[in-house]
Length: 223
Image (cartoon, rainbow, N blue to C red; front, side, top):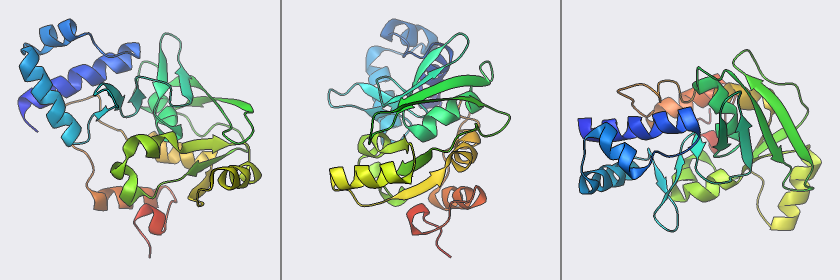
């Protein structure tokens, strides 16, 4: 990544971590000392490199683990309120933002609408019998990353997963407990608020998934 792009990436991520909001165009230009056209080019490059995700109107909707709109997860710290981009991202935020090592993650079950919340910390998994369901296999997440993130959800239990699959006509993806979700999220984004940051290559990602107990074709690490 070029120094310019890394400077823009870090400014965007730092603002989202500190405030839950994107920096204004003026603030971003002042911090990076770049022109509007240079910022536009940098953000296009960052999206191509999967550091940012644009929405339908070419606005930033995801800078994982942070979202700029409702993806069904709120993450409330002592001083900051974030949108989590999915179950994975919502559990990751308290593990990433060192000033807020505990946060209240809230969502609703996609099948029955029951509200759920957990205090997520860096100390270990929250209590709860709910389950996560990820619809899209890892190899295809970036085919449509917004759709993939919208379908990484938490359900009351497996019966609610089955009910949702029947109602939506989707095929079953990966189902796992909250402890596994926390392990997945806890170190996935390590270093993202520092510089320079390097995304994991697919082989490294598959190895990470295996290290937290997620193994099989869905995760790209079948024995």
